[in-house]
Image 1 (cartoon, rainbow, N blue to C red):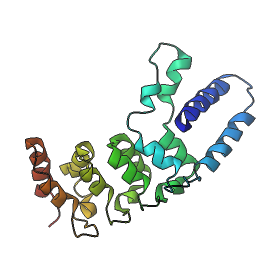
Image 2 (image 1 turned 90 degrees about the vertical axis):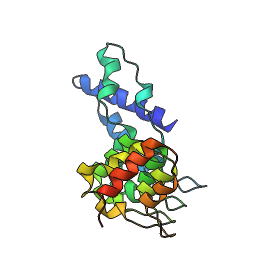
Image 3 (image 1 turned 180 degrees about the vertical axis):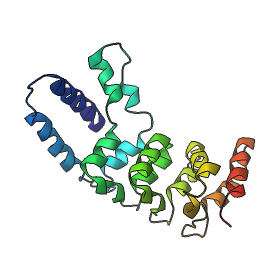
Length: 202
């Protein structure tokens, strides 16, 4: 429901901006509503709309219908719900749920690499956020076997950028890389581990 509202409002705003002399008061009202919505929390688990948007992998791109029409192609150029929520409330990236999980943990747990990239691009220090168990988003990705996220972090070109979290320990003293070693289940996984350990900071 929330993401459908985003898509409808974005398309409406795009249409209004294309109309010369259009009334932009409705767009401003929607922006205000979005800002208020981005600060809300779920009564049960304390999650925010950004947690929800970050945890949905593939949507909203799955909602876009590729028909050769300016009106229908407009959504392809629109910002994603995660970007809209961050624009409305940049502090939402630093709001944990009741388990201490931040939106970047939600994105990593869902394997939503694109969302992880957006969060890290706009708020690089999200990489060091810890949940109630002392886990970074890399721990969360490993635990859920989201190896796309793991490979992105462990790539040699990003070794210096993510050096701090490669060896970061959770509350049990485990690093994300040591957790990877426990998951000795596939040759592909061993390749990820070798690359990660080759370029880790000693």
